Length: 162
Ligand SMILES: [Zn+2]
Image (cartoon, rainbow, N blue to C red; front, side, top):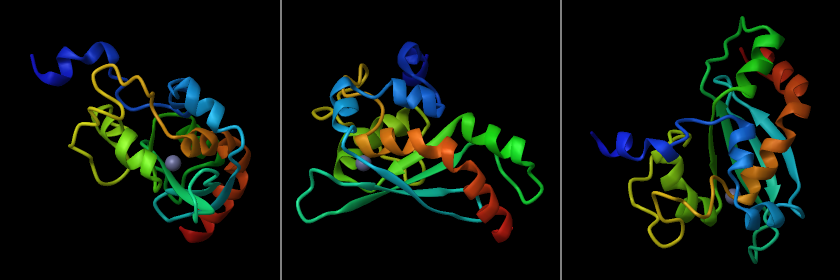
């Protein structure tokens, strides 16, 4: 039995927006309340950028979040299937330090990290296998709450680029 199988009871193995938001720690949920997230852009591959207020980082106004569906979206994807893709499993990342040092490792282990994997255990900031600090930072928590409302805008821009 490998490491992943051994801990499979707590591995979420990719995650939907709802699962990631439900998995956010109580503290981060509270801290996400003053955060406001705004849609920035979508690229040809369907990676969506959001900009969320940094709130607590001195000298930083915003952090960028990137969110991409696991299910591939294409030029021919209908609006219904496009919406569906963002309702299913997502890959996420945030530029903030909290994500980098606290969540990137869990996101790697649980298969929901977008881009570069983090192999260094967050043994102090969010120790495995229980990950008491939850799934995502307050910015991603908040950005995930505004995806649905932005689908028409995202789809329009995606079609223009493809
Ligand atoms: Zn963040």
